[in-house]
Length: 205
Image (cartoon, rainbow, N blue to C red; front, side, top):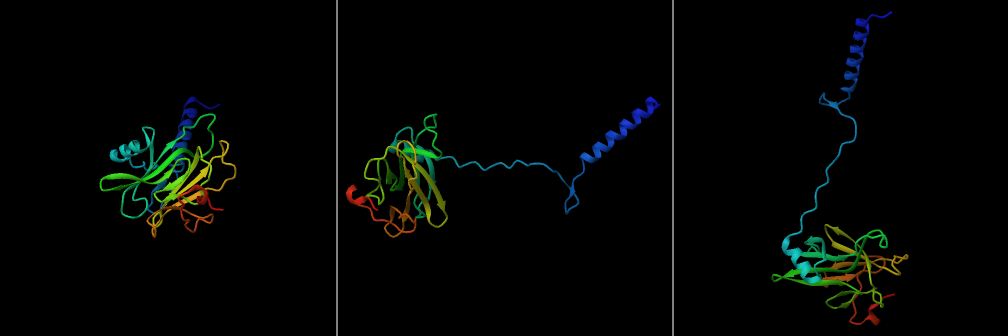
């Protein structure tokens, strides 16, 4: 029969061994130990919208306007911002992505902000209706966008039909450095389309 002293001694040995194993890890090249397990990496916070840009967005689009992007969006050296009236997520609005009723890109010139691209019922710039914009007014759009270091901001507007995107191709919009304005792209997203002053001629096949 083991004595109480032997049992206590064995328990202490087990605890020491467990602590030694817990401290073990893979050796680093510098002789240290690697601690296994997931390591949380903090994501950098998005820069706060400058107050003057937020104020300009609300002045142009109402108090519910949200600034989605800002800076030298078109790579022209001028400040721009992308703002939208975003539809909040509800049980009846469960479409993935950002759904907007109106969006605009505004550019600063002479201390004032002017809309250079408008998305409401149609897609428009200062010259007219963009190619591929639907003739019938659209009540809502799914908005996606990306920024390229060289090309700048590219937007993708998908018109909602019956409250959902029913396999409708998005309309790509990008800054055209030759015409110096935002224009829509063809369905290959490679070539710019000319805008039209009327809807009948503005829709492209």
